[in-house]
Image: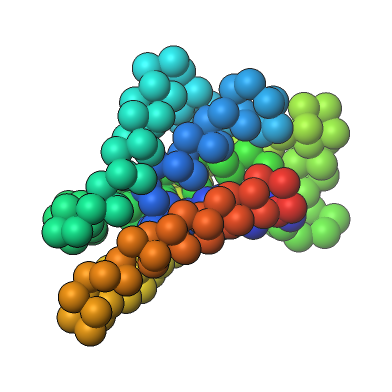
Length: 182
């Protein structure tokens, strides 16, 4: 079961909404590491990848500028959980949900997986993964925003740039682990 990819990318989206989506889109489109859930195939389109590159750069820069970082975090309070849900759902093709041993449905899933290498999760399973990704993103966003607020109050914002760099490193590590060691 490779549930680490959708959940790890969902978690990372709470810190940086766009870089996990961009990393997944690139790994699916050009590296062929993943197959995107067909419902979310637009993520690998040119226009979406270009938009994600621009937004990732904006996020990286805005997060380092005092005052702008707080406004950016405030506006992303709703964006980050949605991004976490989106990336978790889009990366759900390699997640195998156990149904039960010996059942007709488990044999059918095994046959489909053996032929295609992919099981498309739909319906309730997709919704659960999207919700989990969104909740993990909301949790990591809340931790980030709270830490930044405490840093601003106690250090007059002087530590925020260092925290931002640490967050960028953490996001890179989580993305690499999620994509290559799920």
